Length: 313
Image (cartoon, rainbow, N blue to C red; front, side, top):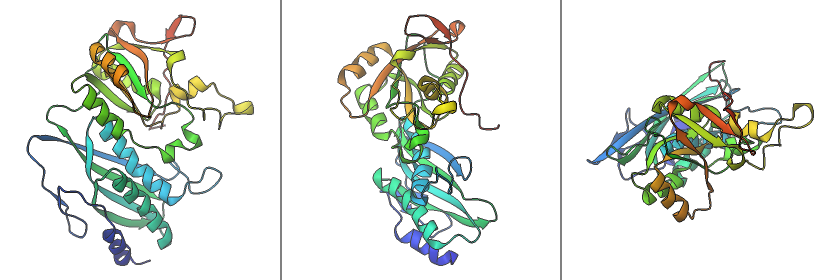
């Protein structure tokens, strides 16, 4: 496999964007950014053995790995209420990798860009004795001073989440669609109604706590209102069986949006939401002193379990 010939194949099919003045093939991509629009800048990575495997019963195809890498970064752009413009990708291939794997990987990366009409503006390619790893840097755009952050939630806000939670290991963590279209529709319906947002990657419990920590607030969520994926039982049978609710709270990699919405805007959102993707009210934001609570079917409450993905363990 020759580096230059492979890069030339990447360059030939790279998706573009109207704001991309200079794309792949130069030392830097050049963007013509319009005035009056804010920029979101995201970097994310995918590492063999941590985010995917190429062998065994849960092996992922290179194309699905490429899609996940780009969609994972796009999910964070969606959580800001923005839209992707241009990505660059650094790929580290295991030494001896054949060209077919690299091209399939690229097809997944480019496929996500094409699906959402943003540019693959350039990148870097290297090899090592280690496993496959990808790093995606992604620029997004949105209204000036209009980014959704984790830090704006207020007591009384209504908590919504998109889609369903739990069971991500079955297939969703590789095949998910970042909720860009949904975020765009939410902004259209309630332009200033979202006070805080995060994408659910570490589990509902952990990511809700991120909002609460940044916003200095508490929250209550209702167990019976959490939309559970039908795939929660796919990797939880026999001695290893786990409660579907625990999977939704702690498994992560659902890549759904969790939003804190101003009450009047929440009424509009619930009434006017007509997308195929479900949008579910699961609770509300409370005063900080109340902490994070899980309300059971019978109305009793207990502290929300502090479970979820831990990056450094």
